[in-house]
Length: 289
Image (cartoon, rainbow, N blue to C red):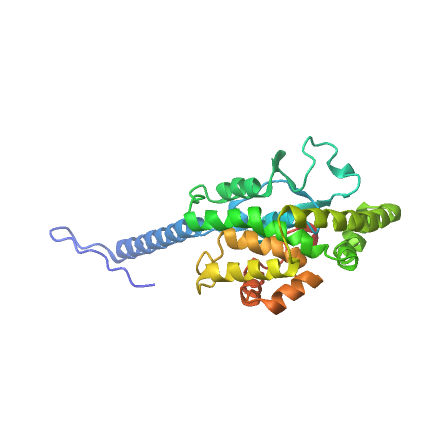
């Protein structure tokens, strides 16, 4: 630390060496305290995202493969918000019988129930950063594109064939779901769920005028890459909410047949890998143990 020069007081008696020493020590201590205070002010403005959002209890009621649930998870993972997961049985939904709202995701934050993935994210970002501008034209446009276009292409691709439908329900056998569901419930959820979603996907394909599922998926992926206009992310050097939304809804299909085909036949792979890197590991409390 730079030496602090004691001021010279003309017209006053010379200070004793002890007084000078005390004065110098006091000045050094003041400088140190001021520097610490400044560092704390800077740190407060740059607190880790997890430190700026400390709900005592965050619980996500979800389906593992649900794009909307994964959109919320991608946001919480990126912002390091710790959360618990309750896997909902897709057949009887017994885990959300307490709620009048019967769709997932449902997020409870300190006892407050939040529903609809985009609304959930809007509320969470405002808790993290009250000044966050949710009305930016480009970001708002592409968040809407995710909800109104991209997600409608996913189901016809995920459940395109009976084998792909069954593949998408393999998560039912993972350890977390095993703890929540009985053997009979898992069996019913996997096979009845896959069969139901196979037929639902055909209806969705017709409703949204999709002729070729894969072609529509590939076109959507490349449309997103074009929207980046050469940038690392739509948000520039860091992802914005649109980046997180696209990544979130695509993450559950990435290692399914449809997701592997998408990466192989489009230009989205580089952006997706960069998003995987910056979003990082799950903030799910059980995932951290």
